[in-house]
Amino acid sequence: AQSVTQLGSHVSVSEGALVLLRCNYSSSVPPYLFWYVQYPNQGLQLLLKYTSAATLVKGINGFEAEFKKSETSFHLTKPSAHMSDAAEYFCAVTSNNNDMRFGAGTRLTVKP
Amino acid sequence: ETGVTQSPTHLIKTRGQQVTLRCSSQSGHNTVSWYQQALGQGPQFIFQYYREEENGRGNFPPRFSGLQFPNYSSELNVNALELDDSALYLCASSPPGSTRTDTQYFGPGTRLTVL
Image (cartoon, helix red, strand yellow):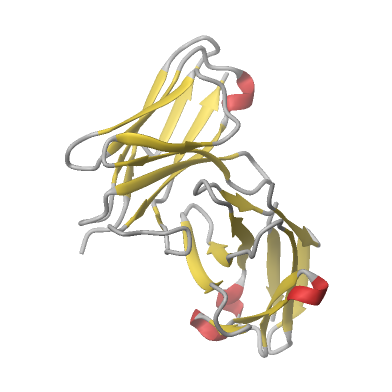
């Protein structure tokens, strides 16, 4: 079975600082990995996805993630945090039966 | 283009009751997936419907059932509600020809509270 682990349930950064949200995956087959963002009282919005093409994936809102097979990681980064980035972030991996497995989420707080 | 919509937005039920949640998929999308998101946790896959047939199921008991209609809208039914069923229920739709790499478009969810 495939799974993801998000390290750190809460991350706090200052506005303008680097954002780093960690995700490690476990998969017996080549994984397809996703990052979603959830704002309060809203559904999930796709930030970016890795589909075995380029290992460095660029997404919306200035976010990017790098797939590192040797480290089984898919960490999400943004060079400069903005107040509007405050939200819950979920890493996810798909399995063969269309079952998308999500991590427990990381709540990002951005301090002024 | 209308996105994924869900109804109702909030619902309160008591233990043992039954509930039906509804989802209208994004225009042109023929695949619908349902997820349960308990407070403080990530979404968990319940099942997926493709062209009115169940197309994959997560680790949920049979009292969780679903339907997909010819217009690709969908229902999630939960019988014999338990306190642990309290959660945000998310619906997501995918366009024709979707593979596991495709983007799912999520609705805003239905918040179910079981007392």
